[in-house]
Picture 1 (cartoon, rainbow, N blue to C red):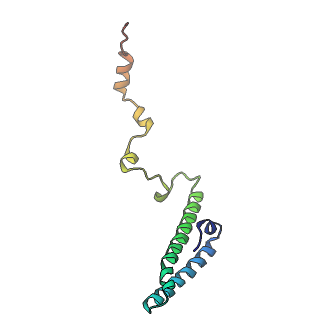
Picture 2: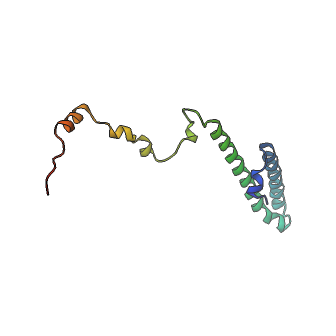
Picture 3: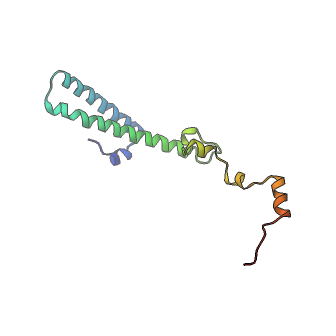
Length: 119
């Protein structure tokens, strides 16, 4: 069983090598299961599949981190690098757009300010 913190220190090539070894082992274990192999081999299938998932997770995280670093100073980001939020939040007006007033409203505010009452 491989540990995620150990995988994070590996390079891309080493991760792919580990992945191919684990997939090969998974194939052998599947054959052992079909042919009625030892119970220990059949029980090992789950841990090998989890190890494959760990390797793929670390690999994908490294790929995404590299893409983020490459797009760091760019004006536009690719869609998978943008903030997800919600569809409504992405389409909502920005703070500056909300603060803007029409010419008519600006004149109205200037000529008739809020009344102050002495209490």
